[in-house]
Structures are given as C-alpha cells and as structure tokens.
Image (cartoon, rainbow, N blue to C red; front, side, top):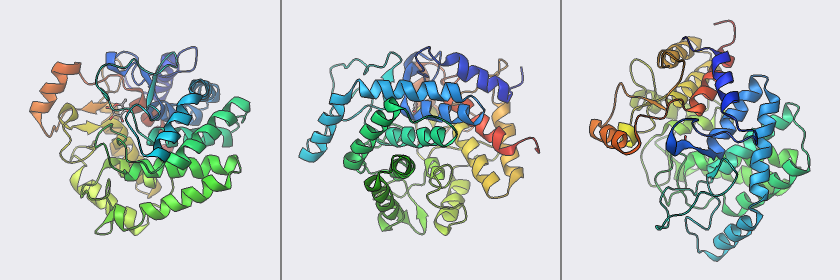
Length: 361
Ligand code: BGC
C-alpha cells in the first residue's frame, strides 16, 4: 500500500483516544503515553490538514490533564525558586492516556521526564490552533496561563533535551520551543511578561553561549550540531532561514547529519537504536528546503520518507540504513524490540511536508 496524506491523517485520527489523547505510537509497548511534544506535533499536522476538531480534542485533553495536576505546577515553581530541582519535582514530558503521571519505580528517574521543550511545544501548537479558528475557552485559557507561569520560572532550568538525553544542560532547541510558545501564546493572552521573556530567550539563544563558529550548537559548552536546531527557523521562526547563523547551522547539518540517500541523523555519536536516520527530521529538513526555495531537495526527502513506509503504509521512528553503531542497534532491539512503527510524529511530519510541497509537486 502506498503511503498517502490521507493514510497518515487516518492513522492519527484512529490512534486518538475518545478523551483526545494521542499516544506516541499506537502499538509500541513503551510508547503508550501522551507526550506533549509528539502529540502537539500531531495536533499541528491535523490542524493543517483540516482536522481542527481532532486538534481541539488534543488541546483539551492536555489542558484538562494539566489542570488536574495544578498542585504540581506550584511544587515545580517552588522547587526552582528554592533551588531543589529533581526529576520528580518538575512537570513531566508525558502522561498516561488517562491523563495521569506514569507510575514511579524505585530510582529517582527511570525514564527522563523533565523536558521543558514539551511545554513550549504545547503552547506553540495551541497558539497555532487558536489563530486558525480554535476558541480560547476557559479551560484552554486556564491551562495555558498555568503553563506560561511555569515557563516564566522554569524556562531556563537545565533539563533533558527533546531526545530525552543530555540531562543538566540548557538546550538550544528547548529554549527555542519555550521562546516560541511564550511569544505566540503570550500574544494571544496579552501577557506582556511572557512576550518580554520570549525576546530575552531569543537574545540568549543567538548569543555567544549557544553559538560556536557562527552556527548554533545544541547546548553551551558542547560542540555538536543537532537536527532539532532546524526548528529555530522552521517552524518557530525565531530566526529566518537566510539568517547567517541558521545558514551555517544548516551547512553543518547537511555535512554531518544528512545521509547520502536521504534521512537525517539526530547528532553524531547518537546511540539510540544505533543512531540512525529519523523520518521526522528528514521531513523538517525538507520543510526548510521548501522555505529556502529548494523544492527539489524537499521532494527527495518526501520520496525517501515514503519509500521507508512498510507495505501497510506505516512509518517508523528511524530507518536503519546507516547506523552509527550496529552494537547499540542490537542493544536497543533486545531491550525494546523493533524501532517504534508506526511513530505518529513521523506521520505528522509526513502530512506537513506533503502540505508544504502542495499539489504543484
Ligand atoms: C524521542 C523523543 C520522543 C519519544 C516519543 C524518544 O525516542 O527521543 O523525542 O518524544 O521518543 O516518541
């Protein structure tokens, strides 16, 4: 079966719970949670694909879930103010599909959960939904104000990155998600403090700590480029695609992370499932190419993505044609089984890239 936009939309819709929750993957055992990052991307894609009701259901699920954890926001902001942050004091990246925090085991942080970008992503996707006809009702207003208040306090706290790795750092793409979310929802809520803080974050991101040799790096003190830095221009529009800082970052991404026959690695030295090529990053790279007027590259990315679909039309998280470490691929397969397939975020990005290329392709 060939993968079509309709197929990706149908898959997202059928995976959404009656409550509005969207799991990272409907089948993979360990991905049965609603990640604010993945689900917000899915809602964004659904909104673009004309499925505003489904996007609204996701945003209401997030809002209801967060409002039922209101006490956790107070605990988290107290923790930051008192300098006693632990993985458990901060708000989680994911909730069970019933809207609860996942059961905690014995160690402090079995699976990294403190990732500020998730809350930035939600605000950004919610603002997009609201500017395309969604209604800012009391539930969405209350929950988004709660998140804005949280990010105003916790936005620059060292945490795990969007890949749930590298704890204890202030990640460039996490700051970018927070800045974009606060800028966009700050405008809709007419919250001047949020908008001011977003500008401050942008200054920090483009300042010397997050830049090396004229290109963005993934966190201060590090030297690596990371595929998530694409988000600074697309979709966050914090810098333009032709900004020299972004252009230099893009050159590094092309030279270091792009695999010759298509597909993008997250970063050099990645070991998760061997550190192979990610569908969602290939789609983002294609989207950046469209924005730069390079439709041919975007078309090649789309072809590569569609060729990676299973015969049933399902997209994995990663394609293992050029693994960085075959041993680590084997390690993760033994631990968690095959790479998550379908990964709904991959399908969301497939929808977005197809939309971007439009019918003129
Ligand atoms: C990725 C995260 C993602 C999660 C669920 C992890 O492997 O690194 O970015 O949110 O899976 O899809």
